[in-house]
Image (cartoon, rainbow, N blue to C red; front, side, top):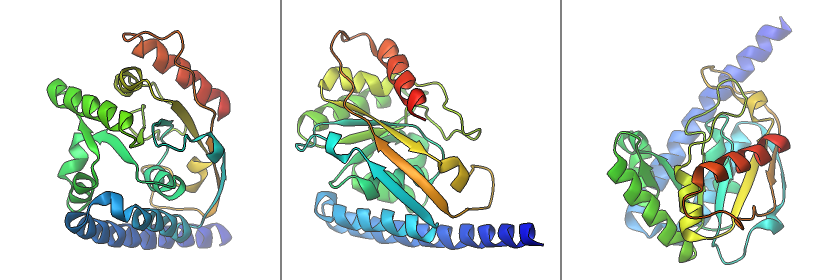
Length: 236
C-alpha cells in the first residue's frame, strides 16, 4: 500500500510540476517578447526556483566562486532530465543562454520563449545553421554573455553519462573563454525520462574549477570533448 501511495504522490507531483512549467513558460514567452531578456533574467531565475520547489528538489550548490564575474564563460553540463536547464537558470546569478536542438524552437510556447530569450539552435542535419549558431555563441561569450551546453545532446535515460558531441567545444576554442564543467548529482533519483513520476529529494549541483584550454589548438574539439567528459564522469 505504501508503495502505491508513494507512486501516486510522485505522479501528482509530476502533474503539478508540468502545470507549473507551462505557466512559467507562458509568462516568460510573453515577457521576453515585450522586454529585452537581459532585463528580466531575475524572472527566469525565479521561474527556475519555482520549478525546483514544486518538484520537491532540495538543491545543494557548490562552486559558485568558480564563475568568472565578467560573464565570459561556457558551462558544460551533464544532462539527466527536464529540470537541468531550469536548475541552470535558477543557480547562475545572471542572464545566460543555451545552445539547444533546433527542434525545440518549433514547440508551442517553449519555442517562442527560447527564441525571444536568445537561445541558439543547432541541428546535425543542418550544418549551416549549426555553424552560424556556434559562431554567434563565440561572439556572445567574448562580449560577456555566458552560455551553457549539454554536450550529450539529449537526456541520459539510463542515468549514465553519454558520449559528448564536439560542436560546443568548438565554441570554447574559438572564444578562448573559461570552460567550466558542471555536474548534476542525484538528478536521476528525482525524475527519469520516460516515466510519469517526480520524486522529492536532494540534488547536488557542483560547479567545478575552470578547465584549462592550454595545449588545445583550434582543431582539437574532439580531444577537448573527451577530456572534459572524463572530468565530469570522475565527479559524478
